[in-house]
Length: 295
Image (cartoon, rainbow, N blue to C red; front, side, top):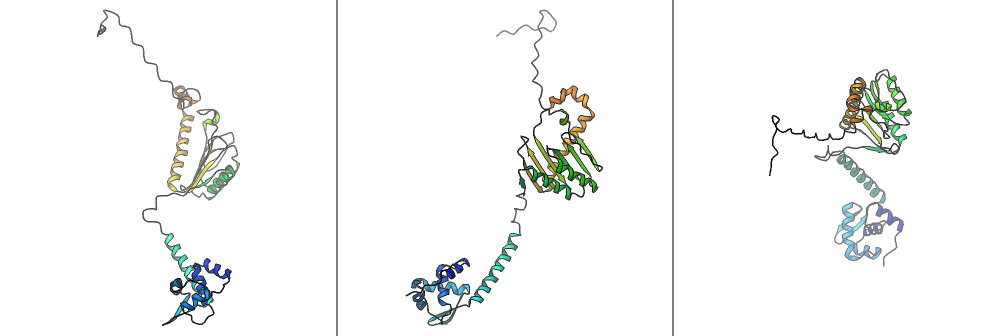
């Protein structure tokens, strides 16, 4: 006849990785004289075909000890020693896992890039300010936002530290720095894009830390940031290219306006395809005239 064991004790051992039969067998052995599998089965209600297999597993775990061989007798490891052993084994497994997982998988080191994403302007502005606060060598900023104050303040703090920067600014607010240049995008004055509703923010700090944010409809933001030199190079190239175009448009405005029309609209709206030239009439008898070909 099996005895009823405390359900809470069984559950705690289950939490520690014991099977239900193992938990019942350990608790059955605990505090008893060395016991045979037959006696343990009668005490705990574990089916006899399962009891010796269960005892072998407990012995391999170190939770039970076989003290004789004929007949085989078993005793339970004292609870304090069992728990200390389990704690030591867990810590070792944790250390092994930490070491193994810290090694990049072979051939997988360059397969993934980690980006942090954001979708609200306060978080984006805070991230941009953090990049600018951390800048030590140089920064690039391209800014078009209806709420630029936090970013502008971070730019001014970077400038006060003497960090050089290049800024492309959209909108009516003026940004001035002592260490670098500020270029006002011509779309501010209705050139190229008269009704440019999209908003964006690009920040590159020290050539590695980068933020790119876009609100295509002017309201709903989508942004990503990373500490990644390759992505930073792409965003930096975008900002620098835009700056070059603005300087060219500023220096050669009349020439470009003559070529591309008011507001340089021809840059974004290609002119309609030219009409095919009409054939000149052929005058009979004129030199070089050819008679119509007949089928």
